[in-house]
Length: 295
Image (tube, rainbow, N blue to C red; front, side, top):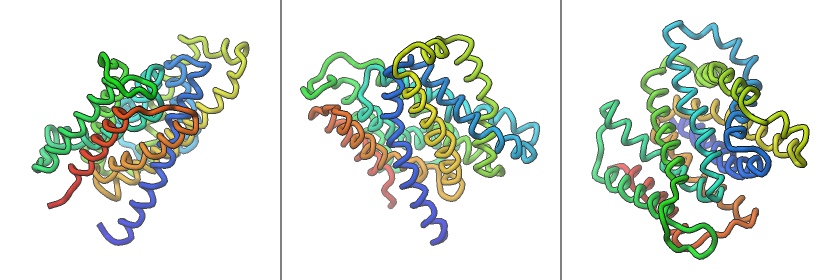
């Protein structure tokens, strides 16, 4: 990596962390009115509409045999996680969800080794184990300030699954779509999944009725549209660019800063963290840091 590309990578990393760290509080605001599937579908729909003019122009770069790859990337990196995170946050604080998102680099390494023959190191194995232990601690932690343990929170597993899809998509973009620009990958992949989201939103939910009848619906809709524009459309373009100019593992390290931003917004929104939450988050971040150490 050249000095210029390293500087660009760091700037992209910080920008993405700020954008994505804010996404969890925006999801929380949308859930005050809309169901999680409505939030997920609206998020993807908004992103697809914002990028529609760009996608149409970028279609000229796409070969016929690449369409299924772009559709798969859109499903793994955008569509499925949008629904999983919204559903998870119906039973989890936004700050905790943001912290668990840090598991993405762990799955990036696991999938890179299992599918793309990347080599594990002792530090990577130790980091993966510590990170997963942190996720287990968070999934067993009570909400609120007590910080005690209870039955496993099934909704935390949805975040784990979303991180698995993120990690899969990171490797998929790097190794399966290496010859397409970031803007093409993002805009066309969202174009391909957009009709699914729009069809679901207007055909199978009560979104339009809530928007016209429920107090605060337009404000909640605005939060989710902003989420779709910044956290899905703009950030995904920047993220795919980061993958192109760096490595999948460095790109996934955006999740180091995301918990800081997510916790900041959570505290401002009066979320309370217990000692078990702090321990779990520290374990995840520490595990990811350890896994990234170079020999």
